[in-house]
Length: 598
Image 1 (cartoon, rainbow, N blue to C red):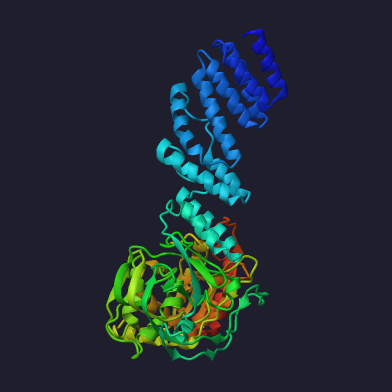
Image 2: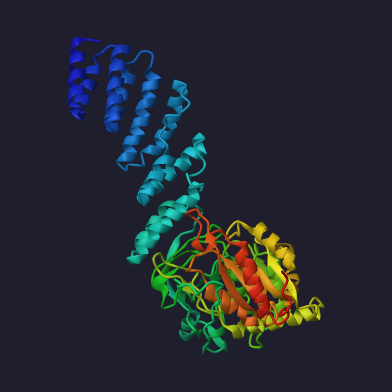
């Protein structure tokens, strides 16, 4: 290594500037290859890298590779790695992709396994944790390329695919943009990555309710039941009544209607219906829209992307839609969840059974719903309608029949908003109860027995689990309780069991919904965690529509993961409190009074 070059190297190291490195590069043009000089340059690169000046480090390593005799591949690899980090640090992401091929070739030449490669997964996760959404998206896009072409990591740190992660992060950006009315910016943003997660282009649509659409002359509309006021449920707790944190649902029920739209698009597994340049969605058009989280387009099983502003929504433009000439909506968000199915979807059959609904129009359901849902449809349907199972792709309807959820029921409220505890109308669920019991009697499944004691197991589920269920069951069996596993029974078998019961104990979940079919006076002990925002009013109004009475016993919530909703926390209850409550409720049961077992 010549003295002149040594002097320039020392000056470059001392200055630590771009000009110093440029002087080194000029000096190298006349220098002979030298491993000693290369080592000095690599050391300089390492120093710059440790000082987080990766752009200068990349240049120093590249110079080392130029002058080296024997270690050029390793220096070239170090230069590429530093260059990638420098570009990413400056948010100059586009030149990184071609460097990934260079990186692989350099690793092969250097016989390097790649453990020191920049981790786009780590970089994306760090940005995500700091709320740097756009940078996180760009890193996950690079991680996706590394996965597909170079054997990189397949998932993000929280177990999502890069496609799902990018889609969800874009949704966060959309929500922020739509809150400011910046729909065009959101559409342009989607154009950059929509193809990555298989989404069609987005368009902006005005949000309207069905009645408003009819008033505009774009739908037919008839009320099956008018709007009316109902009574508030009387809540009962085994403990002294706690101060609930939820907002009581409205007691003014909306009309139950039947409406028909011509030439509309719908998306199975969601509640979104598109008619022309409008999204027809009662909840999204509700005056409380500013407080409501609309979940359509968010859940993993959604087949479309959507984001909702105050008066307009971004919806994925339907592409390659399946054509159905006429159908009645019995599909939608959370349709496979029994609790949502029975409260939000089943009441629509009252409208479709109405004489004003034409014969022959099929009932359209989601194809991923369990068989019990179809069993319920067959019991309620008085017109022997055909059933069409819709796969997860958009549908174009010539004629689309719609009926509403029987009460205002937001899926969830926005952060820091009080949970809205919907109160369900007893008149509608009373009619459903009578129809189901009538069909059950016709089939001979109901017995005269009215004194059974049932404990409803939750073992088959992973959320809202009673963690000491076995302990509670062991205390209840000597008191005459049968342990019931609803997931092993048909719907009518569950109806028959509840109808024969005098006392039911179970976790407050969808399996307990069939207490609607119990006889008047049947006592229900609803076990639940300690969250005071829980929908106690919703459960009470629903269950007691059939004449049963529900009393809640709150246990102790268990620690839950961040991605688990507070309503679905697991919990434990004191078995002694359960048996004490059972003794008291036995005295209230017409079928069991005076028959306490100890």
